[in-house]
Length: 201
Image (cartoon, rainbow, N blue to C red; front, side, top):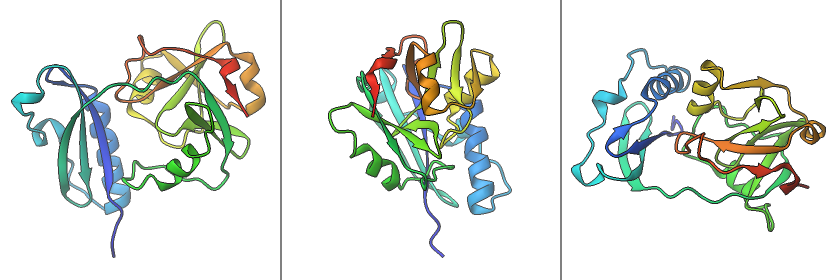
């Protein structure tokens, strides 16, 4: 049986891996669910950081199945996202961070002139093609309670009380003023905002 490979993407800034607690949690949860693994891995012990990537911002990508397939490092430059297109996909599933992103790419390809898509499933806002979303309602940051993938940065911000989660329907978007994208590579404080008016059909 060929089981699908999974990935874990970690922010490496000036030689320091970020958020390892949350990455370890998700990695081992995925390994238990997808591969029946019982022994936990510790990414801090598994990742050797080459000297040539100790300055600047890099993406560390671990590809794994029952065992680690490869660990790669690549320089990272955040994408500039100023507009989103709402696309409906009631059948999409991405509960684990699979290497196969075909369903996400299929939706991304529908973006038209927008920079990315915001996927709607069964009437509810979920994620963009590569990030969770948070929206500002004038007093707090809110994230959808039905994301496609529970990102590590999302989990961290929820536990720290920086954001809250709630059911978010398409018609609820008008209650917000702007949105931000969050994932392991994006710094929440400095990530640019997206005007709600730039999220369209």
